[in-house]
Image 1: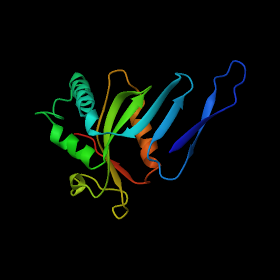
Image 2: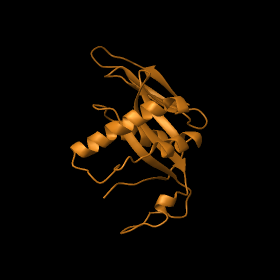
Image 3: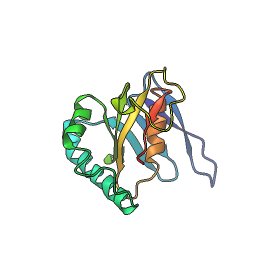
Image 4: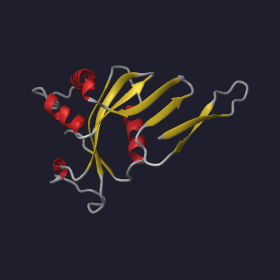
Length: 165
């Protein structure tokens, strides 16, 4: 677990926080001094499935608004895939002040998606790795990818994430 504690505050300057880690990072709590909101990453459960699918729909709409008409089409990602992530312990939610604002899958490799890479290669194809899939967030939410990468980097030093052409 990541522990956050407040350190110092001078007149006219906002407080800031130090993050420290205990054992394996299973969850993360990040305090944003300027916004005074708390973001937490937690494993999703079956009860979270409706909210996860809402967030995925938000992601789909965001992609369409930005001109991406080729990704997450035809009902992808399907409920069955997301449910599989949950059952395998690979589905996570980012909550802000207790409200789920983003979702993603984080799984240990190898991942069949990366069995063959076109027009490129991994820097190190021999090390164990984790993958990030299916990131989606609520409208107006910022900083989610950085939060996820910071969190994942406390678990592994080799993360693979793909982009869509």
